[in-house]
Image (cartoon, rainbow, N blue to C red):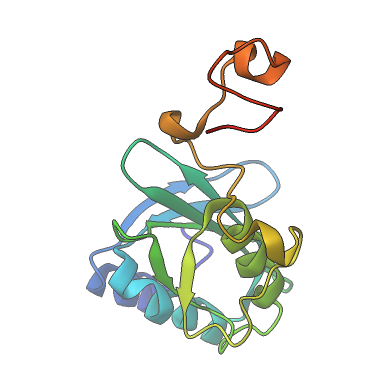
Length: 164
């Protein structure tokens, strides 16, 4: 038996959502995976059913950015993990129009990963300064990593502590 109403489950499935339900002792946990094009509509469905976002995070894999949102309900023991991937250029729709508090989470993901949230009202840096607009510390890009030799300053290719 699901903690979500059958009507909501059917609506989620209409977005080709892959749903996995776990039932821990203290309530239900649903894992919902959707295409990035259906992210905003899926979040809207969850909001309309009384769920609110708890957090959002991102993970940079080899070819894409995985976005994970956790939603909770205050009137029943239910958590929903909503997962999607940003497009290849690192773009995803912003959820700030639905949940104004998501501004902070999306700005952090923009700083750390360089993900652009389309429709976000204010993507200025939250953690990093303006001068670090090209630095996205949590991206896994091997060509941007420095070697230990470079960090120690023993690399002859580096002059006066600066990379060529």
